[in-house]
Length: 451
Image 1 (cartoon, helix red, strand yellow):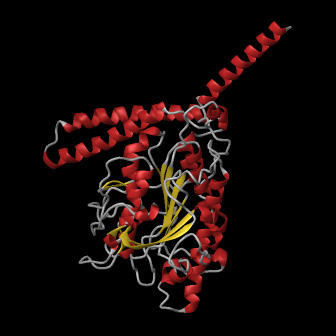
Image 2 (image 1 turned 135 degrees about the vertical axis):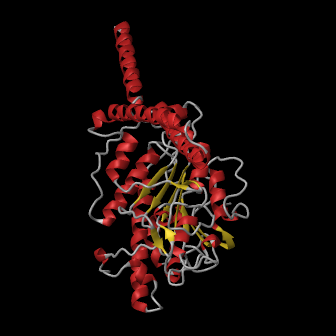
Image 3 (image 1 turned 90 degrees about the horizontal axis):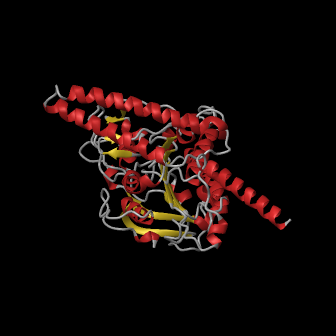
């Protein structure tokens, strides 16, 4: 009897092992509590995301009262975050002087968007001769991106993009892209939830996603092989500037090839979520869906670095869902008219309500150490404009949610003495485990606000 029971238990153990081995090929397994209890070394990864909202805020409704510390009351705009107050750092005094007006005149919205994550003053051009800087998300992704299927994820809730001139002679690329791989190469963000999901997890029904994804990767590799062969053949006939352009093109192709090869080596998650549809008609639903996809990408460790352009800088969207028919950008030039100021406050708060839902969902997901996904993350929310009425780039409305896995204290209001926002980015990069980043853009050192 004992032998029969032992044999049955052994078969059951083998069946479980085979099941888990098969499952591991299609879903990123969570860290198991039993392994943790047995003393196995388990490291919970840290995630980082930058969420951008346009046109600044009404400062009087954004900033807490007092000089800082843990004993602070949330101001009206931030009140929806009460449920995750203990996870917040509201940080005043940060600035982006690279976006200030200079000899190139107006264009504050384009400069704010183009410099926010780069800290480098952008070249004023409406043509293809763009020049900005490498954004901090790409600097971090360049060091840790090999650890996940995707080095970074770029999302937007602006479904429409334009080319050419978008702000006083500045190219639209500066307002529609937060992330820059090189000073001349922005990373286009994706607005279609279906395309984002299929890129991350594969197309089709749940039982077919992984196979479809693998098939697409092979097709992409075949296309790249063909393009490289064709380009190298053409390269032999070029000289001078054309050869330089071809070298840059080939470098980009090789980078794509390397990303595909890295992705093929990683396990593919297969979440229970149904494949979403295209861009929802309602803006709030679009934002919620993109945040859900970001959370899923973090939870499955598909990526650890992300940017979300909630709306492009200078956006003039109206908010009829809360009774506001005027455009956001137009309202921010309120000329101190109380009715217009009140409407901007409502818009600011509406955006924060979307953020609150996302952060509360992150807080509800527990990691192996018993702490939340939000605790192990750094979610920066803010704008490259401080006061939209005056187009200032000082005292930017910035908050960081999460604790970077314990790298810094949260649940406080922190004041700084007019330091570059890039100092904060360096400190965040350190918390992600990067090495050797001495400076980023116009940084002057590490920020003390995160200590």
